[in-house]
Image (cartoon, rainbow, N blue to C red):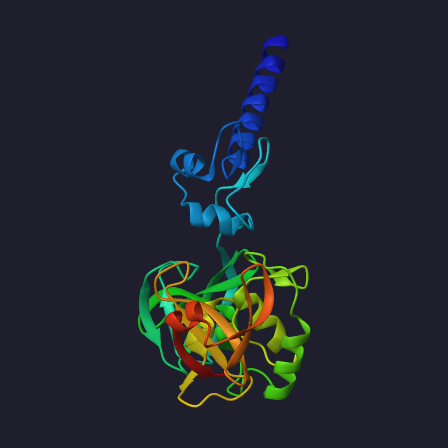
Length: 270
Protein backbone atom coordinates (compact mmCIF):
# COMPACT_ATOMS: atom_id res chain seq x y z
CA UNK A 1 0.00 0.00 0.00
CA UNK A 2 2.80 2.36 0.86
CA UNK A 3 4.45 1.69 -2.51
CA UNK A 4 1.17 2.38 -4.35
CA UNK A 5 0.63 5.61 -2.42
CA UNK A 6 4.16 6.74 -3.15
CA UNK A 7 3.66 5.94 -6.84
CA UNK A 8 0.52 8.08 -6.98
CA UNK A 9 2.31 10.93 -5.21
CA UNK A 10 5.24 10.74 -7.63
CA UNK A 11 2.90 10.58 -10.61
CA UNK A 12 0.95 13.55 -9.32
CA UNK A 13 4.13 15.52 -8.74
CA UNK A 14 5.33 14.72 -12.24
CA UNK A 15 2.00 15.83 -13.72
CA UNK A 16 2.13 19.09 -11.76
CA UNK A 17 5.71 19.61 -12.89
CA UNK A 18 4.73 19.15 -16.54
CA UNK A 19 1.76 21.50 -16.14
CA UNK A 20 3.96 24.13 -14.52
CA UNK A 21 6.49 23.81 -17.31
CA UNK A 22 3.80 24.26 -19.94
CA UNK A 23 2.36 27.27 -18.12
CA UNK A 24 5.74 28.93 -17.82
CA UNK A 25 6.73 28.17 -21.42
CA UNK A 26 5.06 31.33 -22.70
CA UNK A 27 6.82 33.73 -20.30
CA UNK A 28 10.37 34.75 -19.50
CA UNK A 29 11.64 36.24 -16.24
CA UNK A 30 14.23 38.92 -16.96
CA UNK A 31 17.64 38.19 -15.47
CA UNK A 32 20.25 40.78 -14.53
CA UNK A 33 22.17 41.96 -17.58
CA UNK A 34 19.58 40.76 -20.10
CA UNK A 35 18.15 42.94 -22.87
CA UNK A 36 15.27 42.49 -25.30
CA UNK A 37 17.85 41.49 -27.91
CA UNK A 38 19.38 38.69 -25.81
CA UNK A 39 15.91 37.48 -24.74
CA UNK A 40 14.86 37.49 -28.38
CA UNK A 41 17.77 35.17 -29.19
CA UNK A 42 16.97 32.85 -26.26
CA UNK A 43 13.23 32.58 -26.93
CA UNK A 44 13.32 32.83 -30.72
CA UNK A 45 10.78 35.67 -30.53
CA UNK A 46 11.39 38.92 -32.39
CA UNK A 47 12.07 42.12 -30.44
CA UNK A 48 9.05 43.69 -32.17
CA UNK A 49 6.74 40.96 -30.83
CA UNK A 50 8.24 41.20 -27.34
CA UNK A 51 7.44 44.92 -27.35
CA UNK A 52 3.96 44.37 -28.80
CA UNK A 53 2.88 41.46 -26.58
CA UNK A 54 4.08 43.23 -23.42
CA UNK A 55 2.82 46.73 -24.28
CA UNK A 56 6.30 48.18 -23.79
CA UNK A 57 6.78 51.87 -24.54
CA UNK A 58 10.55 51.43 -24.96
CA UNK A 59 13.20 48.72 -24.98
CA UNK A 60 14.03 49.27 -21.30
CA UNK A 61 13.37 46.25 -19.06
CA UNK A 62 14.16 45.43 -15.42
CA UNK A 63 15.44 42.30 -13.64
CA UNK A 64 12.63 39.99 -12.41
CA UNK A 65 10.18 41.52 -14.92
CA UNK A 66 8.04 38.77 -16.46
CA UNK A 67 7.62 39.04 -20.23
CA UNK A 68 5.14 37.24 -22.45
CA UNK A 69 6.92 35.27 -25.16
CA UNK A 70 3.82 34.21 -27.09
CA UNK A 71 0.51 35.73 -28.15
CA UNK A 72 -1.86 36.15 -25.23
CA UNK A 73 -4.17 33.33 -26.25
CA UNK A 74 -4.32 30.49 -28.73
CA UNK A 75 -6.82 29.91 -31.45
CA UNK A 76 -10.10 28.40 -30.30
CA UNK A 77 -12.52 26.61 -32.54
CA UNK A 78 -15.84 28.29 -33.07
CA UNK A 79 -18.81 26.44 -31.55
CA UNK A 80 -20.51 26.50 -34.92
CA UNK A 81 -19.70 27.86 -38.32
CA UNK A 82 -20.93 31.43 -38.73
CA UNK A 83 -21.37 33.38 -41.94
CA UNK A 84 -20.17 36.97 -42.24
CA UNK A 85 -19.56 39.39 -45.09
CA UNK A 86 -16.50 41.55 -45.63
CA UNK A 87 -17.31 45.20 -44.96
CA UNK A 88 -14.30 46.32 -47.02
CA UNK A 89 -11.63 44.78 -49.25
CA UNK A 90 -9.94 42.53 -46.70
CA UNK A 91 -6.52 40.88 -46.81
CA UNK A 92 -6.85 37.30 -45.57
CA UNK A 93 -3.61 36.36 -43.83
CA UNK A 94 -1.84 33.11 -42.97
CA UNK A 95 -1.91 33.97 -39.27
CA UNK A 96 -3.67 36.24 -36.79
CA UNK A 97 -1.85 39.56 -37.18
CA UNK A 98 -0.75 41.99 -39.87
CA UNK A 99 2.77 40.58 -39.76
CA UNK A 100 1.64 37.39 -41.51
CA UNK A 101 1.67 36.98 -45.29
CA UNK A 102 -1.46 37.58 -47.36
CA UNK A 103 -3.17 34.36 -48.52
CA UNK A 104 -5.88 35.98 -50.64
CA UNK A 105 -7.91 39.18 -51.00
CA UNK A 106 -11.60 39.03 -50.13
CA UNK A 107 -13.36 41.89 -51.90
CA UNK A 108 -16.02 43.98 -50.19
CA UNK A 109 -19.27 42.02 -49.79
CA UNK A 110 -17.64 38.59 -50.00
CA UNK A 111 -19.25 35.91 -47.83
CA UNK A 112 -16.86 34.17 -45.43
CA UNK A 113 -17.34 31.32 -42.96
CA UNK A 114 -15.94 31.73 -39.44
CA UNK A 115 -14.28 28.51 -38.26
CA UNK A 116 -12.25 29.81 -35.32
CA UNK A 117 -11.04 32.87 -33.48
CA UNK A 118 -7.97 34.17 -31.68
CA UNK A 119 -7.32 37.12 -29.39
CA UNK A 120 -4.05 38.94 -30.13
CA UNK A 121 -3.51 41.69 -27.60
CA UNK A 122 -6.77 43.66 -27.68
CA UNK A 123 -7.66 42.58 -31.21
CA UNK A 124 -9.99 39.73 -32.11
CA UNK A 125 -9.10 37.82 -35.27
CA UNK A 126 -11.37 35.32 -37.03
CA UNK A 127 -10.16 32.22 -38.84
CA UNK A 128 -12.19 32.14 -42.04
CA UNK A 129 -12.85 30.10 -45.16
CA UNK A 130 -13.14 32.15 -48.33
CA UNK A 131 -12.32 31.74 -52.03
CA UNK A 132 -11.55 28.06 -51.39
CA UNK A 133 -8.84 28.99 -48.90
CA UNK A 134 -8.58 29.43 -45.14
CA UNK A 135 -6.84 32.24 -43.29
CA UNK A 136 -7.28 35.01 -40.75
CA UNK A 137 -9.12 38.35 -40.85
CA UNK A 138 -9.52 41.13 -38.28
CA UNK A 139 -13.01 40.92 -36.78
CA UNK A 140 -13.74 44.64 -37.22
CA UNK A 141 -13.48 44.25 -41.00
CA UNK A 142 -16.37 41.77 -41.09
CA UNK A 143 -20.07 42.27 -40.54
CA UNK A 144 -23.09 40.00 -40.01
CA UNK A 145 -25.43 42.14 -42.10
CA UNK A 146 -25.35 43.68 -45.57
CA UNK A 147 -25.94 47.11 -44.07
CA UNK A 148 -23.12 49.53 -43.39
CA UNK A 149 -21.08 48.24 -40.42
CA UNK A 150 -21.48 51.41 -38.41
CA UNK A 151 -23.05 54.81 -38.37
CA UNK A 152 -21.36 57.57 -40.33
CA UNK A 153 -19.24 59.84 -38.21
CA UNK A 154 -19.55 63.57 -38.77
CA UNK A 155 -16.17 64.97 -39.76
CA UNK A 156 -16.54 67.99 -37.47
CA UNK A 157 -17.25 65.69 -34.51
CA UNK A 158 -14.17 63.59 -35.24
CA UNK A 159 -11.93 66.65 -35.46
CA UNK A 160 -13.43 68.15 -32.30
CA UNK A 161 -12.92 64.93 -30.33
CA UNK A 162 -9.39 64.45 -31.67
CA UNK A 163 -8.37 67.98 -30.72
CA UNK A 164 -9.61 67.38 -27.18
CA UNK A 165 -7.26 64.42 -26.92
CA UNK A 166 -4.08 66.42 -27.53
CA UNK A 167 -1.48 66.31 -24.79
CA UNK A 168 -2.10 62.67 -23.86
CA UNK A 169 1.20 60.70 -23.62
CA UNK A 170 2.27 58.46 -26.48
CA UNK A 171 2.17 54.79 -25.54
CA UNK A 172 3.03 51.93 -27.88
CA UNK A 173 -0.09 49.77 -28.15
CA UNK A 174 -2.15 52.38 -26.28
CA UNK A 175 -5.88 52.69 -26.97
CA UNK A 176 -7.14 54.73 -24.00
CA UNK A 177 -6.71 58.20 -22.53
CA UNK A 178 -3.90 56.78 -20.39
CA UNK A 179 -1.83 56.71 -23.58
CA UNK A 180 -2.27 56.28 -27.35
CA UNK A 181 -0.30 55.00 -30.28
CA UNK A 182 -1.21 56.47 -33.68
CA UNK A 183 -3.87 53.96 -34.76
CA UNK A 184 -5.26 53.68 -31.23
CA UNK A 185 -5.72 57.46 -31.23
CA UNK A 186 -7.60 57.37 -34.56
CA UNK A 187 -9.79 54.44 -33.47
CA UNK A 188 -10.71 56.16 -30.19
CA UNK A 189 -11.56 59.51 -31.82
CA UNK A 190 -13.82 57.88 -34.42
CA UNK A 191 -15.48 55.63 -31.84
CA UNK A 192 -16.37 58.65 -29.68
CA UNK A 193 -17.90 60.33 -32.74
CA UNK A 194 -20.01 57.33 -33.74
CA UNK A 195 -17.97 55.19 -36.12
CA UNK A 196 -16.15 51.91 -35.56
CA UNK A 197 -12.82 51.60 -37.36
CA UNK A 198 -10.09 48.98 -37.39
CA UNK A 199 -7.42 48.90 -34.69
CA UNK A 200 -4.13 48.93 -36.60
CA UNK A 201 -2.67 51.31 -39.18
CA UNK A 202 -2.64 48.90 -42.14
CA UNK A 203 -6.25 47.86 -41.54
CA UNK A 204 -7.31 51.51 -41.34
CA UNK A 205 -5.46 52.10 -44.60
CA UNK A 206 -7.29 49.18 -46.28
CA UNK A 207 -10.60 50.29 -44.80
CA UNK A 208 -10.47 53.79 -46.32
CA UNK A 209 -10.57 55.22 -49.85
CA UNK A 210 -7.92 57.50 -51.32
CA UNK A 211 -8.86 61.15 -51.96
CA UNK A 212 -6.86 63.85 -53.70
CA UNK A 213 -8.42 66.82 -51.90
CA UNK A 214 -8.64 66.25 -48.13
CA UNK A 215 -11.40 67.46 -45.85
CA UNK A 216 -11.27 67.77 -42.06
CA UNK A 217 -11.86 64.29 -40.63
CA UNK A 218 -10.00 62.46 -43.40
CA UNK A 219 -7.07 60.21 -42.52
CA UNK A 220 -3.46 61.09 -43.32
CA UNK A 221 -1.05 58.20 -43.86
CA UNK A 222 2.73 58.19 -43.70
CA UNK A 223 5.30 55.62 -44.75
CA UNK A 224 8.77 54.43 -43.75
CA UNK A 225 8.78 55.90 -40.24
CA UNK A 226 9.70 53.14 -37.77
CA UNK A 227 9.16 50.41 -40.37
CA UNK A 228 8.95 50.10 -44.16
CA UNK A 229 5.64 50.81 -45.86
CA UNK A 230 2.55 52.38 -44.28
CA UNK A 231 3.49 52.94 -40.66
CA UNK A 232 1.77 56.03 -39.22
CA UNK A 233 -1.68 57.65 -39.34
CA UNK A 234 -3.32 60.87 -38.20
CA UNK A 235 -6.52 62.86 -38.72
CA UNK A 236 -6.56 65.88 -41.05
CA UNK A 237 -7.93 68.98 -39.28
CA UNK A 238 -7.66 71.54 -42.11
CA UNK A 239 -5.21 74.35 -42.88
CA UNK A 240 -2.55 71.80 -43.89
CA UNK A 241 -2.43 70.37 -40.37
CA UNK A 242 -3.19 66.99 -38.81
CA UNK A 243 -3.67 65.68 -35.27
CA UNK A 244 -1.99 62.45 -34.24
CA UNK A 245 -0.30 60.47 -31.50
CA UNK A 246 3.34 61.00 -32.38
CA UNK A 247 6.54 61.87 -30.61
CA UNK A 248 5.95 62.05 -26.86
CA UNK A 249 2.22 62.92 -26.96
CA UNK A 250 -0.91 63.48 -29.05
CA UNK A 251 -0.51 66.79 -30.88
CA UNK A 252 -1.41 68.92 -33.90
CA UNK A 253 1.36 69.08 -36.50
CA UNK A 254 1.82 70.91 -39.79
CA UNK A 255 2.16 68.84 -42.93
CA UNK A 256 4.87 71.32 -43.91
CA UNK A 257 7.03 69.92 -41.11
CA UNK A 258 10.16 68.66 -42.88
CA UNK A 259 10.05 65.19 -41.32
CA UNK A 260 6.36 64.47 -41.91
CA UNK A 261 6.45 66.05 -45.37
CA UNK A 262 9.17 63.58 -46.36
CA UNK A 263 7.16 60.63 -45.01
CA UNK A 264 3.73 61.62 -46.39
CA UNK A 265 1.94 58.91 -48.38
CA UNK A 266 -1.73 59.80 -48.95
CA UNK A 267 -5.06 61.17 -47.75
CA UNK A 268 -7.88 58.64 -47.35
CA UNK A 269 -11.52 58.80 -46.33
CA UNK A 270 -13.57 56.37 -44.25
